[in-house]
Image (cartoon, rainbow, N blue to C red; front, side, top):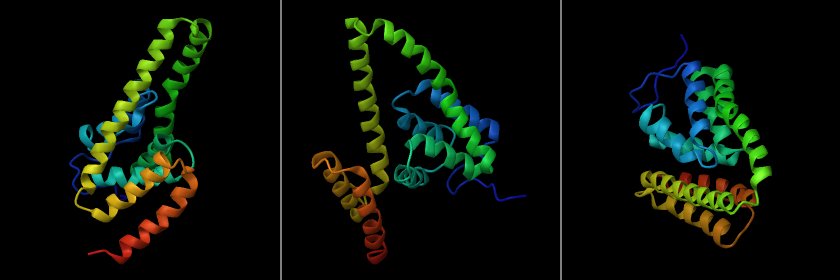
Length: 188
């Protein structure tokens, strides 16, 4: 049997291909436009597939890879536990329902886009998504609170992208190796 033991600190057994599909299908159904906080809750807190540190590390890798972060995460989590079938199940589960729903909403929005209620609804949804993103950001920073060097890299990245408006790709291509070198040099 292959090594499918649960990650350290996680009490749940590895998910089956079906559980991976259903977990990401659920995320796709409830988390349009802001699924990262929900993914964190499902994988770390609810189903215990990953520890907080594993989620943060995996998300960091997924953010560095081309494509959508959560799509990369669904493939990575599926691959980790069940190989290629798990990766396919994660991606398909994540995108199946939202694809159908978005197509239906596009038809409805095309007809009612000038309605002021629809405009206000879209604005409210954007504010809620921003709030969820802030909440998960704080949860992800908590494991780093005693790691000053990591917090410094996070702060530099935030300033470069959010304040100075530098492009994401050059910032990540610069900070990733710098972070690795700094951590290797100053490791306790």
